[in-house]
Length: 258
View (cartoon, rainbow, N blue to C red):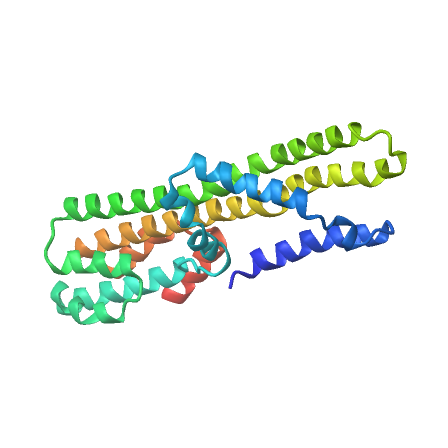
């Protein structure tokens, strides 16, 4: 579970409802089916038009990444590859085949398999760089779906408000109903703006940040794997990968590996 996503959503939506209560309002006053159907149903429809049906139906998996997926720890990747470099230096590259079953991450496992199979370094780099690029492209689709929804939702909210005001103006002979009608009309705008800024856009930003982090981690791993394949000293393997770390994490890992 990604606590930052959960805590952020709870804090953002909680602030809205606390502010509503402080102003003397109630949650029931914000609950109306018509505006919700227009905003959320319209946003979903516009999103499906914008992307392929396959990508749209894959939204559940995308949301799972934002809430549940764990990114690789860079320091753990460095420790793993340094350990593999030590084994390769002592017993040869073929000895790494016995370690493959212990590697949980598919990218790292496949990369080490390429090295064990004797694939040329240039080919290893090309294969892994292609995989990293396509991984980033796949992640970008999910991010774009939510970012697009964040753009459509406020506009659909405005459409709902205009529709509500038109209906109200058609019934000016009932002054007593004007207040509730205006409130109901503006609920559509509220739903659109809230869903965009407290749900769709933040999760899109989370997916973007997570994708960048994962790509950077795999690029770090790629440099370490190529260094390992070249027969570099484990210390050199670690040094090449630690260039990707923040200063504090780099210093701590240097002390650990010393």
